[in-house]
Image (cartoon, rainbow, N blue to C red; front, top):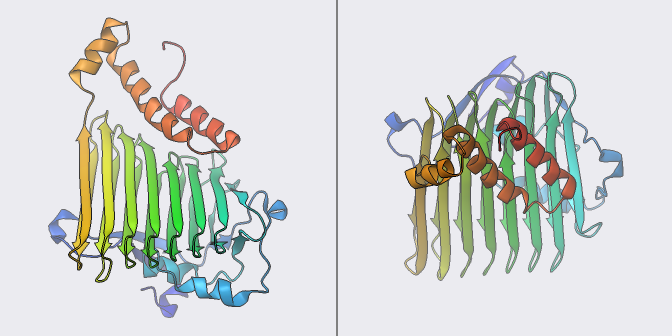
Length: 366
């Protein structure tokens, strides 16, 4: 963990996305180090639309403070690094059923913010989070999101990364579910030079559920490092974690997905799957599905599909006058647009489609 002494220094290394159960060090997947982070250079970022947000007041400080103990996917280093922020954006279902938060890094520099989402008993909350920057902006955007779903509550978080190519993203999430609560997360990682992201969900209550859908499009040297953990504590809990992405030239992606059945989580079920389409050269793809089990009466499934375009698809496209490059771009765009259709916010969906159209060279020939 980052010590107070290190925080006061100029540069620190953050160890993030540590696997709950370590494998061979030679594989290089147990954890990731973000080197030379300028700990004194981060400034609190204000949401573009912050003055119009229906933020919860600080009167119920006991609730918001209790959420600080929720563990996150990226680990203690990020928590210790961000804890200096005492002014979190707090959104509660008591104030509004849905909200959109837009972070826009208009100038260069490192920025951070803490976000807390809470839904009361049998209430529903949907939050869209858009991450943008100017084309010339450089720096790291570090976000930590804590989620707490009370009994019978439903919380949906949608995150869309449309940062410029000189920005980096550190995106840390922790969620906690009580009885019959549901948390669903939809993420699209498209922009940025480097992205590190993690999600850890504590399914504490009986019959609680987690659903995660992650989409990504990486090209031109982008890196994406992910760590998703579903901790099953309650009885008859369920988790589903799906990732679907495209890797093009000179990119590196590492996906860790862990389903952990704790003792007492009888009748629980977990599913995780990843589908990776490789379209370019010099691509590094690493997928680490992991199932841990301390309970007998459970069901866990994992799988990964990794490959290039099928020859039959290419032949079909060619028979209709579409060359291999255009066919690849068409398939890649279709994958991302399918997830964009699930966002539920027209403006963000449009921005995602415009981004992927530009990235794949949409238009002239198709």
